[in-house]
Length: 256
Image 1 (cartoon, rainbow, N blue to C red):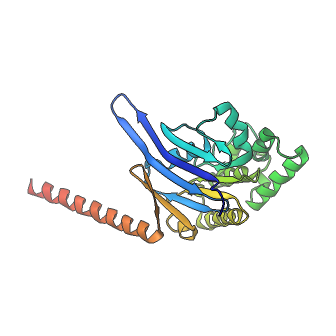
Image 2 (cartoon, helix red, strand yellow):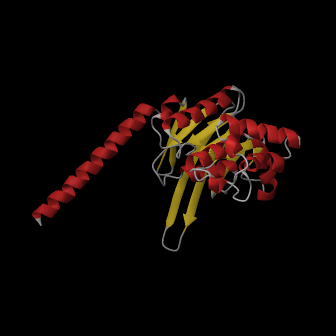
Image 3 (tube, rainbow, N blue to C red):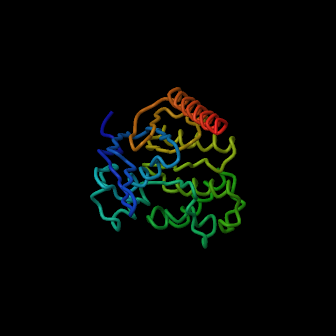
């Protein structure tokens, strides 16, 4: 099997506020190999996006270590990570993070330009191919604010794929897409994994995650391997518990 491409070891992230100490990640461990397609599920606020930020080096952990390929992310200064990240990691953000003053095609070309990947005419050709694949090539010379939410989501994914990254990260990458478009995106991610890219996404979509071979659940700062059946069982238990609590409150109000 060889060496894992992504190694997360005993990762801890604590936020200190004037009123409380919030431990978001509590000793998280994760190994992903080239060609792995993995998903992390969990409730809102469970730390999924925080974990992605640690893996991509956007944020630093309180303790622990992240290694991607031959790069020790946690031990490397941000100024050295930026260009490396543009060449090796593609990130499709939940809230797009598009460059508002650049055209659609220039947004896709931005990571290629910054990472100095390929010649300029090749970058434009690559960008247009991705826009065509996602059905927004006719929007190429508009600015992102002129696109719908779904189109901006597809643009964000196209940009993430621009440099054929070794690690592809998706933070709720299908949150603004209809079912058909979302399934298309997952097929793209799966095909990249089949060709050796390590793919890691976080999602709330229990329907789409059924086709993801590796699933983790993040709850209370702890990351554990899980299955779709276990996710459904946990969800059923949460609904049952919430319903019982509601009935208890209603009964108490009646008695008062």
